[in-house]
Image 1 (cartoon, rainbow, N blue to C red):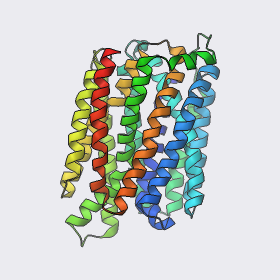
Image 2: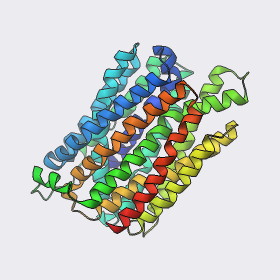
Image 3: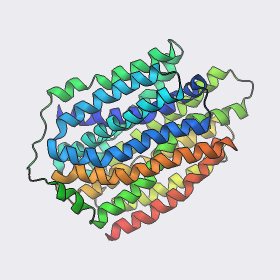
Length: 385
């Protein structure tokens, strides 16, 4: 059952990451906000993730997986209900901030369990890729469920269903038997990791990657709406919204496929840096294509390519880093990586939103290309450290 808990944790994380993007086309008119304000909501969520990462990472090394996983499921569900009921920008901002703590609890529990409980702990990169297929499932199911329910019931009830989905796994989290830590962890171990070059390089890589993934998750529907509206200006508004939201589902399916494929590569841990460099290059070319897309079909193809390219980057990076350390410090490693990683995730979506106010989301995506270039450089640095 512990494999189920680990998978459901990253599924819940995917749901949290997809939530704001999935409801964006309805949330902005409901609150009367523009792209800049919506970007601020995403940044608030991501900045909280940044603060929570190092704290929760150390906590899980100290107290174990179970309490962190349980708290993650409960807190994310409560915050989602609050977002569903809120009617003002400030009323949504507070649960968005708290959602970051719940999401990081799920992230830390899931991504530290996966390399321990899958493949007998012998292939961390493959284990992280396989388990994070469920992250893609969360990204996939959330916009599909929300898009369907928006047409069948009220805004509040539609998002409340997502909250129930986040809460249900707490049953497994309570009943599961967790791996025992060998003990001996002290706070000084976490600070000692800050001197490890491989951890610092991985953190910088995650800065780039999380900026890319978060921007895709939160701006794909708006990007799609712009492209589809320009191609078919007379189309029904609800139909355009639904088509735009489905881009996020295509992206999620592609991420699932990419991670499943990567998990079947026996040498993924040994040659992980080379895989990361190659996929980052594809991601950069895909983003350039998105800035020039002129049809719904082009947007769909590029969403799939983006998902395939980004899919193996984080799990492979985490697995390569984990392979150099004992499991007792995995939580702290994840914490350090995501503390810097979410700094990028809190900045990039807001920059895109601010730039889009004077232009468009489509044109603003060009901000992401330099991050792909930097990711390629850092991948080669990781080979040397």
